[in-house]
Picture 1 (cartoon, rainbow, N blue to C red):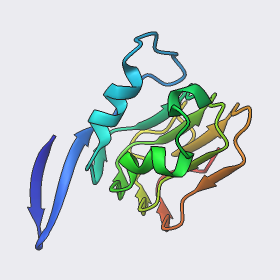
Picture 2 (picture 1 turned 60 degrees about the vertical axis):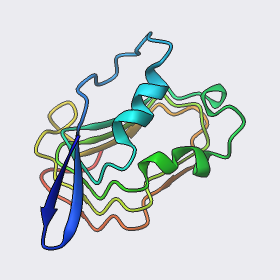
Picture 3 (picture 1 turned 90 degrees about the vertical axis):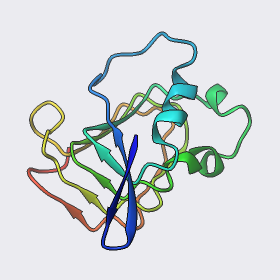
Picture 4 (picture 1 turned 30 degrees about the vertical axis):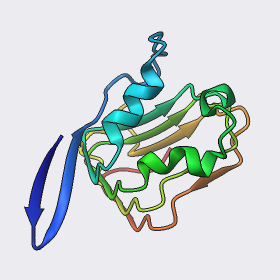
Length: 134
């Protein structure tokens, strides 16, 4: 991650992932996810939120738990929300999904197979470029 100053606004760029629907078996993957995206404002690549279970939250309210994603404003690739068992995912400041790469070559935003998901809160999302939602 590095800092880029553009018109008096700091942007913290971070690398996205390209795992698609692959379930990671690393027991520390959630901590790695938090480290990877904490304070990140622009994801260079894809943001993949997959296989998150209630036990990963350690009893924390989902909105508080996902606060490590609060700074993300842009994603250059796609946003994948897949096979999660939690009730809510919030990306409080996400404004743009550029869709330079689409999930399965068809979608910049793909939300599917989430057993208990009731809310995907994207209050500032104003634009999704390149191809339809899935």
